[in-house]
Image 1 (cartoon, protein in one colour):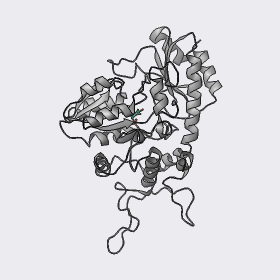
Image 2: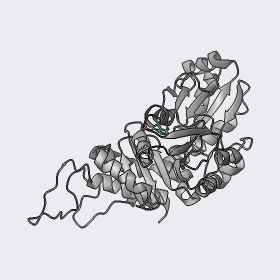
Image 3: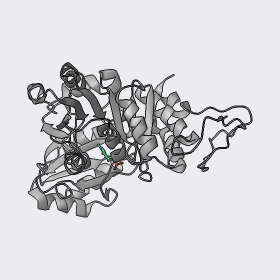
Image 4: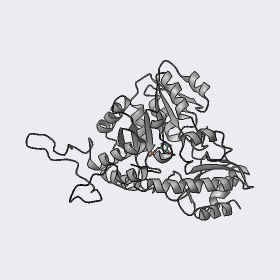
Length: 371
Ligand SMILES: *Cc1c(COP(=O)(O)O)cnc(C)c1O
């Protein structure tokens, strides 16, 4: 089946007499048979729940994986992967990795005994020379935040696998509609489903999808069911419901972002636009090869530095001045001021999560705000 059909039907089984919209199963416990067996396969909701299982089946199918584990946040999903490693293991992560992932690695996992190297993953020689005997994981995030650099997943995976390391890709920004890391060789794909998959800025969630239930995914499942960082049945239901429209939302996000990137790149008040769909993007050819479209995220640098950038966010009317991304509404944010003081994000950079409003309205708001 094609992706639009999977988005509606995957993980949903409806028998005669069943409600067409799956009910939300709030019960934490399930009655056993007289002999102690479990007729529905369910025992206790931390271990498994019908809404979570429906969501996981859908996520696995969308990513082209065999199994998925849903978590209460994207950060909890990332932790499940890091927890699959052992004390003394070495991890290679992108130098411009999502700020929250960097905080997890630096504040939690360094103390826990992981060794981390932050590397420019667009430089294969640098990746190769960063590998060590104890390198067990290469973490990829592409396009990156907030500069939209593109990492060649197939090429980095080859280097990682030669070194005996697994590859995890944070696929939150592109979504499975735009990029499918498992088909490019990666071992696991990780999402903050809070973003595009949820799509309405009203739920928190995450997931890990893998090609096989063995290997690192065994640890991920164990971390999920024994650690219990799971989403509630209502959040699973809400997310499963949102995914039904994901293919159509992503098409609108991508079309709007492409048009805005083109327009802004010709605007006299703008120095640079970072968007993988623009021919002048440094990794445009890699993006064309590994992405089905260019995504709904872009960033741009305003002439006049930090003050000029803040003047823009103070003048937008339709676009909300807020963090996060992937919702139906457009959001703009000055990233340098929310990141670590050591950040290399330019002070004149604004990040835009392009919503699914009419693109003319978004453009008019931006052009007015640019003065
Ligand atoms: C938001 C985000 C996360 C973290 O997800 P939460 O759901 O906020 O925990 C991880 N990676 C990327 C790329 C994100 O944008």
